[in-house]
Image: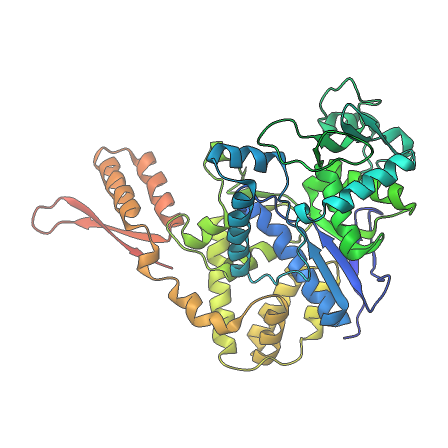
Length: 461
């Protein structure tokens, strides 16, 4: 498939033609989950975005010529804390959380990456990087720690392009007397608490220790993709300090100007107009959406389409209305396709995706194919974008009443009826809107025998 892919590069702040180092071995690394808890819907965004890029690269260069590495961070202080709180081993926690992550993203239609390295399987590579950096004068040992010396790298900050004062404030580093500079960051640290995992330390340190977060991704990408590779991806929140520090470690360890030629970052996600947080009650995991949220179990392909409707670099507002619209759209497309086999992917769809994953334009082209009745082209385009028309029956069946929390609906209906009787129409309207968001349509009337107000309801999805 001959076409030119253009990608926006955070490193250059420009959209450029993508030219792989080796067209026979296109290499991409994406930061994966820290497996201490279930992945939330914000975590799903990079999974879906870079799965789409993986599919596009495979369609362009050939499936066997693309290597996609997405790591599992199974070594982290949050993991240590959670396992200690639950009274289970770190391995037990990370294994069960990883299994749940896989089940959730499989439902989103995401392909498994070519390789999925775990941090704990790459301790020797992390230690080797520490040794190289100390030997090159880019790191030093202090009180059982190995620390990267930021002043040793004159162009530190070239990825995030932040002013020095902002980087100091954003690093959120601990005040430590053994640091030579407040910007220096940890490559290796001692394990001194009983519940902390530890390994023999590098650089002549006697006590056992464990790696810092940033060195993990440098080690895993080096192991599986080499000293320099094509694309590094992740969420916009990772640009600084995580990705900035990855660049510093890898380029200083190997003496190259870059770690990856192209850096790509997806935008933030908020829920119903607000930043997602447990305190606001809008924190939702992928699995909760699949199992039932706002009175409805949402199919994975509905979540996928909702995520792809906006451009990956822009912020996205996750709403029930957006998911409902995606559901109706998919049902319409699947009806058009029927049992027709996919044909070639239409050029306008490829052109849109090749323009920095312009999914909004690609989806507009899907609507045009649907309107024109081009079922083979529509089927091919959907398949490239990670949808499976064979699941059409399952998608339609998921709207059954048993997916609705009937107890919750009845409670809200009763509360609204009481508000109407009390002439609290503001509360009555708010409850009607809440029920509408659940896909519930109300019909107000009167009991024929008593003349009392009654309300009946039905599911409109």
